[in-house]
Image 1 (cartoon, rainbow, N blue to C red):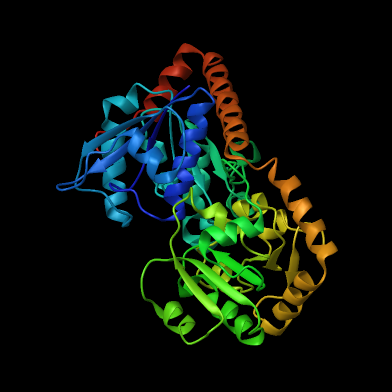
Image 2 (image 1 turned 30 degrees about the vertical axis):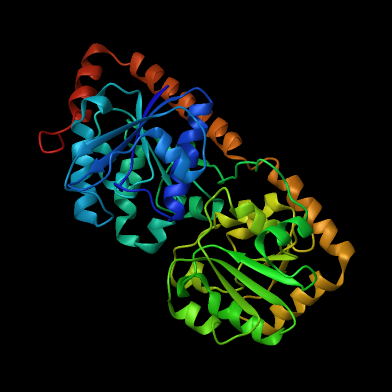
Length: 404
C-alpha cells in the first residue's frame, strides 16, 4: 500500500501533533507500507531526510521524505488550503494508492484529491465549529473518502452527530514505542539529579497555561513536602514564573523523546492536571498523548474525571481519578497514592497491562487493516457499476481545474 502523507510544517518541532504524525508514519512503514512524507520547503528551510526525522522524533522505520518548494508552510487556513492544492497536483501523490494526513482542512478539501484519501483527527471539530457539520458529512460520504481515523471515541461521537457513517470511522487510540530499557526509580533519580527519598509528583508535557497547570500549582501549595517536577518548558512563561515562587516546584526543559522515559520512571506519581480547561476551555487536549507514555511507565496516575480519558482510565483500577478544578480533592488523591503502596502497585500493574495493547505498531496494524479493507470495498463498488454509471461517477469525482 503506497501512502502519501503531507505535513503542514517545514521544520521539525516539539508539538505533539508532529510527534504523533511521525510515530504513525514510522509504524506504518514498519508494517510494510510504502510511505512518502511530503513537506513544504520555503527559502531558508533546511534539507531534511528520513534519518533526520527519525533522529528528531526518536522513531524507526523506512519511509521516504519529499520536500517541495512552497510558500505555504504553516497552520493558517489559507496556507493550508493552498498547500493542499499543491499536494494534490504533485506527481508523487497521483502515483500513490491513497492520501493520508491529519490536516484539518482535508475535511473540506478531500473531495478535490485526485485519489482516495483518509484523514486523522483528534479534535471534535463538528462540535467546536457547528457550521461545518454539513460539509464534514458530505466529505465523509464522498466515494473517495476511505474514512476518518479518530483518536478517541469522544471525538468520534462528534463526527457521528455530523452525519459521518459508522463504516467511515475508525477509533484508533494513540500509542507509545517501548523504551530501550526500563529503569528503577533509584537509578532514574540518580541519573537526573533528583532527591532519592523525597516524594515526587511529575507532569510531562508542554508547560503553558492551556494545560491546566494552574491547578497543579495550587495542588503543590497544599503539599509542600512533595516535589512537583514539570518537564517540558520551552522558555519563561507565566507558569514558569509562578513556579519560581514555590520551593517545591521544579521546572525542567522539554525532554527529547528518547530521554523522557527516565523522567517518568523517577516519579512516585504521574499527574495529568486535574482541570477542565484543556478539554473544555482551550479544546486543544483530547485524550492527551502523554497518557500513553504514562501508562507504559508503570507508575500510578493521578488524573481528572473527564469524558475523554475515561475511555482508558478507570478509577481505582488503572488510575486514581479526582473531581476537576478542586485542588483539595487532588491533594487527597495524591495522599492516597503516596500513602498506600499496595494501591500504587496495583494501579501501576494495571497501567502496564493496559499499555501492552497501545503501542504505535498495534495502532498502525489497525489503521492499515482499515484502509486496505476500505480500498477493497471501494474497488468492488466501482466494479459493479455499468459503463454509463462509471463514466458519470468518474466525471463527478474528477478534480476541477482549480483543485489541481
